[in-house]
Image (cartoon, rainbow, N blue to C red; front, side, top):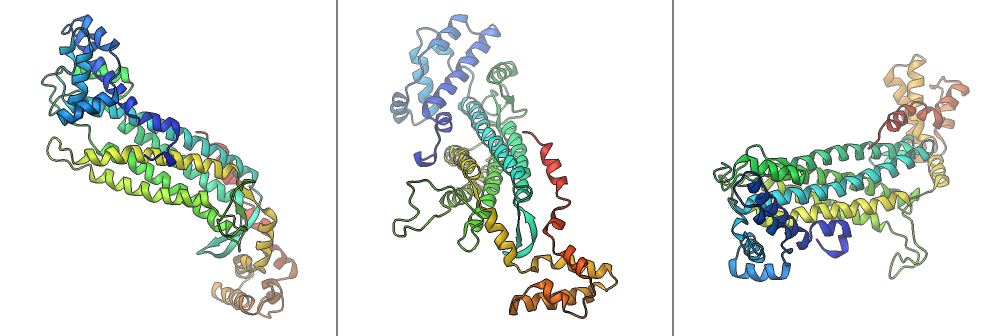
Length: 431
């Protein structure tokens, strides 16, 4: 995680202080579990619980000696208690602490991301209803297609965010597990009751059949949900970037009074926030690939996943958190130029109504191919030589539609008459 793309709450989750605090919480709960089972003395649990937090600087200094991060932590924690230090890490292997604590940290990180998605969904939904009747040109392949509404475009974003939310929930629940089952997951030195005690108090689930680690398909699931959410944000950002192009100018990112778009060209007003989100999405897909690679470990475990996920998990959750916050601001402040949308619709010279004419001719008795050819030749002439599609069709002997029938075809409202069902569906969705 780099400071430029880190927000305070997420940075706190992944701080060294927070990590060591959760490690200490796991160790404390294990001793308390031993007390509950009548194995360890009560004063040992009390001593570990009131022990000071392990100092990150001292921990790193100790790790330089042990070359083992958990062993260094255990040395410092056990050495800081006035009694019962021998019960620290009793019956545990390092991954009992590492993976159980990681389940807590990933749960907390995912919860922050879920709140960001929920917030963005609310903003997008509100703006979708605001613009449900804002008519604009729909485009496929970047070419004029048929009239649509900006609200309908935003409604597709909202439903995608709902799916992202559900996927993220599933990923969050998948990684929010721990294990206190020993070196190869046999519970040889710690009975299952210890694991149940610890995980229950941490508010996480239990890996039902662990090895030395919790299984990395869980982390891959979360990273995949993160990558998919990033891809959704990229879709939204790409749309904004296209609509902000000088030749289109239908929407644009907000632009502050003191903002500069270019160091060289004072007229510039660039979609920099959307471009930033696009770049972040590329990284997130890369981290999903790392998650997949981490699933296949040797036998009961190796540590080939360790170095990769020390980077991938904080970075992926942190970057998505940042990108979501940025997209929240982009959509909330998005400037929608409805006049320009109308101008661009009129600039199509009626070409976007071609399918309506095709269907009207077919309904009046023409074969589909004959109807298609009538509309197509007039559309191509409009493209190449100017004029409007309606005027050309009106003067084409092959087009036997009345003026009133043609008028019905060239009405934008015709294309939006059934879109209410989408907004009824959207109104029913709450996160």
